[in-house]
Amino acid sequence: MHFRPRASADAVGRWSVIALGLAMPMSVALDNALLVIIAAAWLAAGNLRQNIEFIRANPVAVAAFALFALLALGLAYGTRNPGDGLRYLGKYVDLLFVPIFLTFFRDQRTRELGLALFCGTMVLSMAVSHLAYRDLLYGNPILDRTAQFPAGFKHSITHGLLMSYAAFLFTVLARDEARRALRIVYVVIALLLAHNVLFVVISRTGYVVLAALMLYFFTVTFGRKGVLGAAALGLVLFGGAYVGSDRFHARVNEASQQLSEWQPGKPSDTSVGLRLEFYRDTISIVREHPVFGAGTGSFPAAYAAIVSGKQMVETANPHNEYLLIASQIGLVGLASLLYLFYCEWRCAGKMVRPLYRDIARGLVLTFLIGCLFNSFLLDHTEGLLFAWMSALLFAAPRPEPVARTP
Image (cartoon, one colour):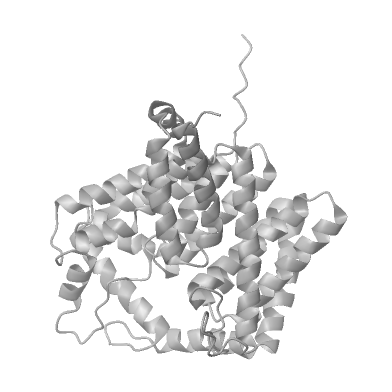
């Protein structure tokens, strides 16, 4: 048997990409180690010309690379604190991995194993969260969690996002599963995941994302009647959570109260008030640098200058991806981000399998909404999830265009 270095490198790369489905929701250190292995394997596997041609033919990969390229160009101008330029660009490097992941996900078996491992890890994360909720992990030397913040392997916002998307994913799997017993299992898991979002975790972003994904699923599956079905189920789930969950009830009321108490231009110390303050002042940065922004990594320095002497809280993150991108690389960058989301939505409609189409559009909705309240592409786990899942889904084959008869 002859040792073939390129084939071995390709196999290492594919298994490492699959392993990210386990690592992403669990360990940043393991994520980073796998990313180094994947990049090295991609280079060592060769076939660069063929890979580049494959990438160039994929609109999603091109759109992700274009956004990263604009961020890299943003280093050439603007004023920033020492080290902030490369630090911020490094946080967006997941976009550069979309084309790399894509080439490994060309293999159908790799896509199936990656998705299965991710789904299994979501169930494990939910189980950990429920154990924490029962205060069974307090003081645990491996994973210390309290009942007050009963997330899985990540903090509450990330965990809520993962659980909301996973609940949607299992719902779509149940719809497309022909075997009755397995379909029932998927439905039960989806309901448990939704319960985790509404009754266990304290992520308001998760509440909103879950509601939007539920509405999309019922609409795309049942048409206009699905809207009524989504409304009925939403009333049961969210109404039940408001009445039956002290956490959900408190988080919703707290947000409403903080919103009513916020006054523009006056310092705030509440979660909602600070976010609104960040949004308002970040818009001022965008107004000063509308077209190309203040430069990649410039946000902390630019924001500090905006709030100087106003007794406002300084921040390195406005908790809104659209505003963060626009403040750094302007409306050109914002258009590039929106085009990436649009490109994924459009390309999802051309997929051969409705399963992948709806999982992909669910991913777009998750980030379209989540980025309103958080800088998800800047955050490690969320940004990597977007890159990894985008590559997995959009590496799937699309139907060949039908030739027109003369």
